[in-house]
Length: 95
Image 1: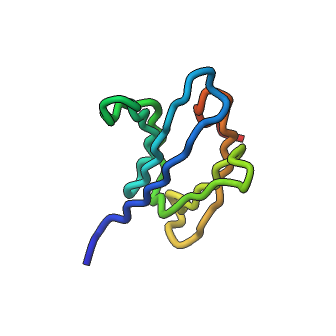
Image 2 (image 1 turned 120 degrees about the horizontal axis):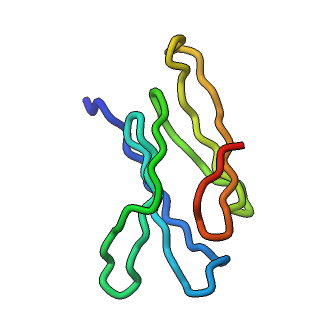
């Protein structure tokens, strides 16, 4: 059985002046956003956010918000939903 869950979500950012693709990854307690080079496919770090017991995430229909499910550090069985605004450049801002 796998100890860690890995969720991938490929998001096309329509807000950037040049076409740019971002890949969001969640693994255990780390949420990572990577830039994908459209020519080579190379991934580079764009943003990293740590959460206690991060389990999954999803985006709003209009891709303006990301919702992250995680558990509280001192109460691991209590789940939280954390909301981030997806900025025009693709960065996530905690609300």
